[in-house]
Image (cartoon, rainbow, N blue to C red; front, side, top):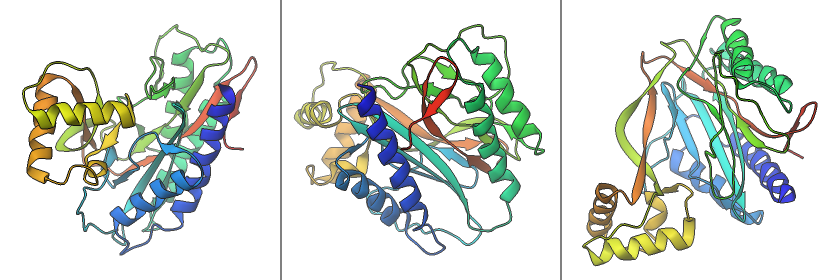
Length: 294
């Protein structure tokens, strides 16, 4: 099992570094997402979730739609979040690209917070203490951590497996267990330090299998379970096998309404502040964290 986590973590890191080089003003977001997801498959793995390319005040859950023509601007600050799985065992890594070259301190704040959190990880470490390290590192650069976004434990076909790694100090007495695999992902901002949901949704995941009326909905439900299980997927991934956009949209609406699918709205900084992100997947060992990148 740990070998599959290690391979997934290594591929996620490789794809992240390779894709970072493609992010330039004028490049299409859809081309970058497709390139990253294809790189994952070429390396013998599968995407654990749609590649997230969240820009400026968007912190997470943005992935381009099927016919998107959106391009990167010269002043964009870009969060690139790549997830990989091997038989359901996940590696989850992210970084920030500052196309303006004007937000270096903001980028560094999340990177140093990630370093501080990793240094605090060991078996028995209190979750609240790790959050305090993240908070102190980000505030040391004059920014705020996003308090309602957290790191998370990873399980088999489970991107958020129960344990949350806070980005602020608190009194949470829960501790990390040896052998746990966790994704640590601090977000720093010059805004209010919280995110809220935007109305746009392009990412979904399977929640259950309630009865639904439409035949296309039943077909879609079976398709999702067979291809993605409980991992998040993008609407744009469906178009190769569901050729009617109207029927697909209707099926998605019915499945969401019935509680079969969970939606992942885009998360934006509540004060419209710029956001940076850094993330690595680690395994908790007795006296340290081992980063799964090699």
